[in-house]
Image 1 (cartoon, rainbow, N blue to C red):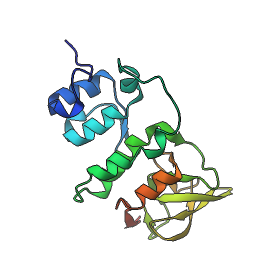
Image 2: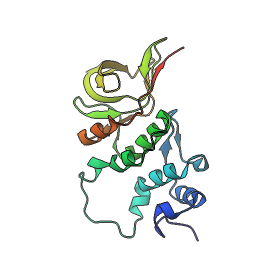
Image 3: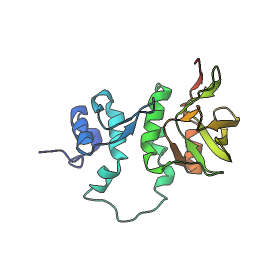
Image 4: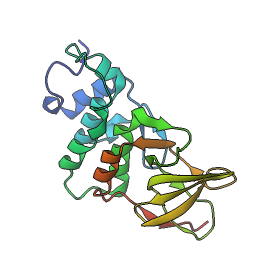
Length: 195
């Protein structure tokens, strides 16, 4: 009999059972390299699998005890449990994978000035030092991208989205409360583009 993920608490399943549940719902996730996947769940650890399953819309819709109350108030604190679950040994890539999974239902194509976002970014400008995992407050929209205050830098940076520099993952919109929580999560990744 196929597992639904509601026979018991997710934490009580084995990793192999969690892999079966992820396969049942064809759970989509984005890796730190920006690639989307609906397979390869065996490579994820138990904590990652639980987080992916808990935040998957198909899994949530299948809940036999789904609450009837809906609203954005539940979404305002999506990262509280995530922050509390951290050990402090996670890599920026592991943290970013988890963040994008949790924020998957607020993916946007374009930023709106004054709103909060995080995403995976690969700069094409040679030898530039940049943040691969920006946490921003969006600013001016430009012909080839946008400006934003990047919390990891502590200043305004320009992000090009055409003609080279690129936004790999799409933008994930955050609430102000989520932005404040993520400010205390060390997932920024300052790297130099050696191209």
